[in-house]
Image 1: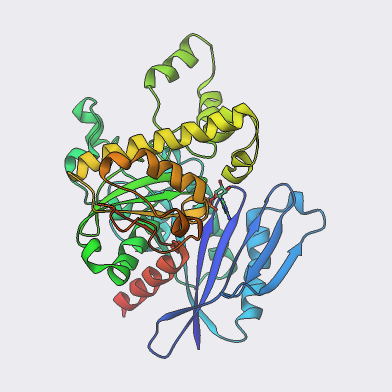
Image 2: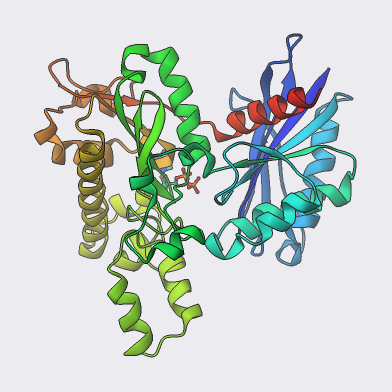
Length: 395
Ligand code: ADP
């Protein structure tokens, strides 16, 4: 028996999933989990698909442990858990594939160098994604690794959705709208074929609402527009990121308030969004449970801006047949879904309040002109599938 591992390595967490391969070579989820609070007090939890805890641990003096050291311990645990099954490859989420990569790629030194050059475009994620690849290469030099890009799903969107209204030479240099969360949207597009083939062939806006948040306009399962652009700062208000912002604000912060580029960067990526507006938390659940006015204002702004971006993508699509909610908030937060949908009533959309409260697959009311679904995303499974496909293509 063989196995494949998916890794999604971020600044303070490493999410992972282990898949064993059945006789036909299809991945079956065996375990998944994450290491959280890296740099503060790292802890590891891994569970089976049914939620049973397989391992839970912390590290004495863990604050000083690097991603690479924690990955080594995770790797050792995974080998034990897989009980002799051979790991045939590791697939990684890599946020940015730049202009060139429209599909997953086998990792080699040349690819890593190209991806290194994209770090300034995704400073919150890309360096950590690549550090994990290097750490695994040091642990197991002959193990094939595959990079799966969050930008790839949006690679072939229409030119008009890719161009920024700036001098043309910049577009040629790569200063253009890429779009992110592509592995999640690709998974949703695939699931929709099974869940509702007719809707999958139509005009759908998928909403990935987690700490990072974006929308994707899909026609027949292909991305034609998305709210994130050149970087993952654009579009919706997020946990700590500002989303769409008048560029004049950035100029003002630097020229009038004397903030350095590094301080502005830190503010826009880490101190804005729900955290910045509330001054309380970046976590939606915490804020909706908090009675303070600042918490209410932050949630209201999140909902308002999400609804506004839904309107923009409805225009890109020329109408909407369906909406899909996914990720932490999209899958679990009934109140936020309901409030966004209330603001979209002008689309002829209404939801069934009970279905929404119960997190049902279909939450639109019977007479709603727009179908509204909740589909849990699974980026790790998408990565495993891509990784196996790359290996097969090499045979
Ligand atoms: P990430 O982008 O880090 O993967 P997630 O997709 O886990 O983030 O989303 C995190 C967000 O989802 C947080 O704002 C959190 O409050 C919200 N969330 C997670 N679980 C629930 C839940 N059971 N009910 C309501 N909100 C939730």
